Length: 139
Image (cartoon, rainbow, N blue to C red):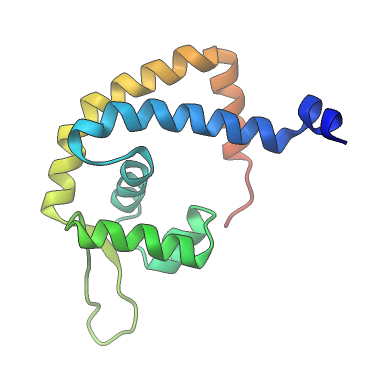
């Protein structure tokens, strides 16, 4: 069984690749006191422009507890805020000015990491990864 898994397990290889790519981004972003997962979540929040916790979690394909934990860190650091909706229960999360400034400052480091990840994957690997992500079912 172990030999079969070691030779052909998609999960094992996907997790290994994820750790290596995550490490590239974490290292590049370290001077900004943000890691790759946090940076990615900040970008997602900026792109969704006022989504609820549940919407962010679904879009990111995360379980509720994981999404809540990750969002709470951004809120605690002051990079994102929950905007109160007038008369409603929905509390959209948006970037704070501090979060926007962090994204602007860290973008050159992200670009360096992006180039390193591109070199690692090659164009064919990058295209395959983008195609797979694009074809995921909605969260």
